[in-house]
Image (cartoon, rainbow, N blue to C red; front, top):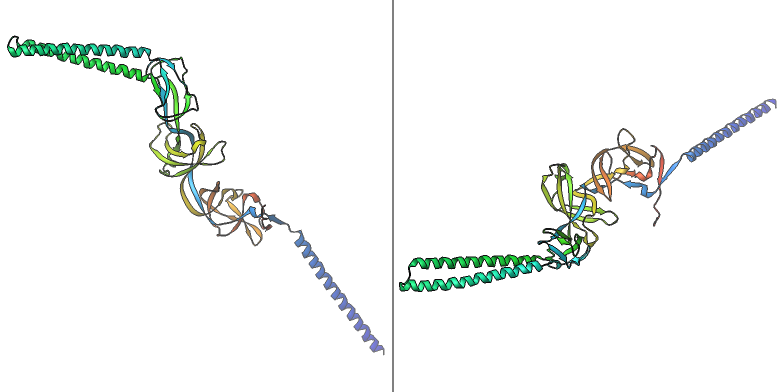
Length: 377
């Protein structure tokens, strides 16, 4: 009886020990699970908008050179006085449209008209002298034929006739000059366009070559751009440029029409001329700047702003397995795309997901989550 009781006590003790062991194991497993859950809950996850990331692709870049300068009219003219006198009937002002051949002003022609009359009278007198000399010559010729006078007298009358004819021609030439002077008192527009400057006033006495008005033809405008010799070697006739005008959102297009074959002596720059397609929105003298596209290229590239330079070597922030990694890259040629500067890169796989500059700096191994972009946001 005592022996059975002993074994019962021992069995109960073993069961108690086993129960305590199972309870301790369950407690340790629960503590480990709670610790893992707490650790997982404590790790931060950075949420990124869809606009903060991009997939690396082969894109088309345009390479070019920056250009700037002032726009000017291909055709312009300054109307000058051809004769001296008092200016009258000048009715056009800045901004007025004029046509080629239109009368712009007149110079007082009373003096020049009198000179025309004087030249006409001189020509008429010279003509009368021709008639007299001609009759004298005809009479002497008849007398010579009849043997009444010598041939010397005929030669003298012939010389007088030729002198009268020469004097008449000179008088007619002087008459033509006087008439042209009268015509020059009328100032006409040599080209069609718009008046850009009015440089004289009615009643003002002007001299020869005095500037009266300036006319510009805005139908054809060009940009004269100065380029360094190294940049000019890439420029060809027919290449296009996109230009920005201050105060105007829309870009304007220009095409290279001419390239100066010589570099300027002082600045060592080359002048390049571009035909500007701006229409009525542009004016002469407007300053523009932009980029002349010299070639197109297909390459693996990213926005230059996405490349970080705060380490000894440039790198990109990419997403691998839901975490941030810093990938060192080799930079290549630069180009323009979407009004941004892009740069070609090496040492990175195609279709890699990388962070744009808007995401800012994120430490390596940081867990990240890209949110789906909400439609319309």
